[in-house]
Image 1: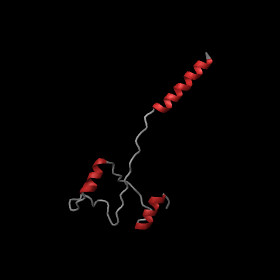
Image 2: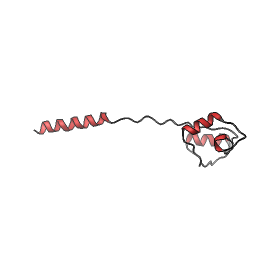
Image 3: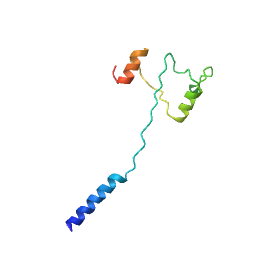
Image 4: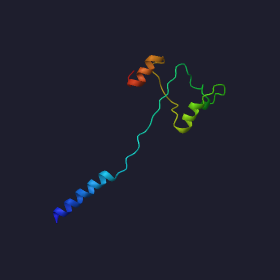
Length: 86
């Protein structure tokens, strides 16, 4: 009886391990542009600048509006973003 119960428990654990659905990986697109100030895009409300492709991306995804840059210069800021270090 113990053997049958043990086999049942092992089969239940084995089944549970393979029956869980796997979530699809999250796709992240990080856009960096040189000399592009924050409000200068049409999805941010600027009517003089037309950015239709960026507008499509912003409607389909999430826009990150709050950030901090320790080095407000092109190459050091890109290096800190890519490495995660100051």
